Image (cartoon, rainbow, N blue to C red; front, side):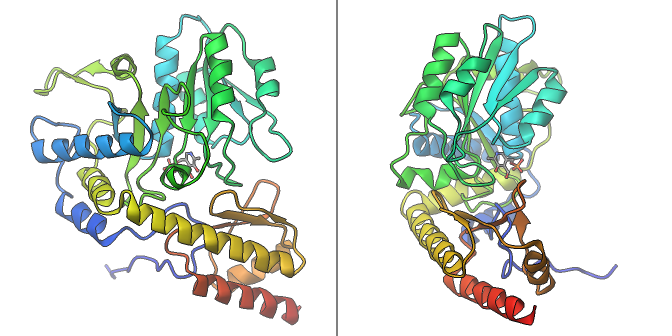
Length: 354
Ligand SMILES: Cc1ncc(COP(=O)(O)O)c(C=O)c1O
């Protein structure tokens, strides 16, 4: 079989993942043949997972975090819904979320057989607490807010959503899968320290610069993990709260290494560079006459014609679109100012060619 090399990140402007930090890559390779799903056998990686969870707790304002390194944001979000469903009194629990939630909540609702009520967002594309209040009822088990939306990088008003959840006797989950490694360096209120948050998703394999798969599921109370745990008769550990059984030790070790290497100064640096790049490319596209959605976090949306999008794709750029069809540029740590400069030159060249 011919050996294929991994794809270069040089022209990737569409991904929420990035090149792993060298220390994270090295740790992933070293722990490839370990399984944190069996923590009594694989004790070193189990200890690394405790370190990673402690690091994620520090990042999200939780001094005694409960949680684990999941396969990604999808699993973490599903587990948040599962915990809420398992802990709910209601016979027919529902989840209320802004329509900007990641599609993983659709999967969670389907797998767990709960109703997902999505609610239109406000003019700035953020969750609208008044509109959400109208859909929350006595059967609502979970209210969801997003801290760094997938399409526009918006941060929902988490404290207001926490109040809504508290009034309804529901739990609050924050999906900071992508935004969680950037938000500590902003003024947004988004984490356990800012509001009464029950569970939170924060993915090392996105802005955290760890290797895939490394998602993060955190809870403020041990009872959340208890609500997810099943007994594990053939393992020496007595129960398991994760969704998967055998898990990637590479992801866990990689997350621990990235956090050790980068928190907080390295992540601050990466965020500041990425944010400056996003603002630069937003201005560059606005100067060219496109409608641009300003980057609250390092993610820019701009209204480019489909023909231009296709021409840029032809030139090797890896791009993505919002549901409304806007170009969506994710300024991850691998995206440099030079890359964005080359991208803008190609925008000009493609327009001239037409
Ligand atoms: C806000 C948000 N939540 C969840 C996810 C799902 O994460 P994963 O693809 O790691 O399962 C994403 C993916 O981009 C996301 O942007």
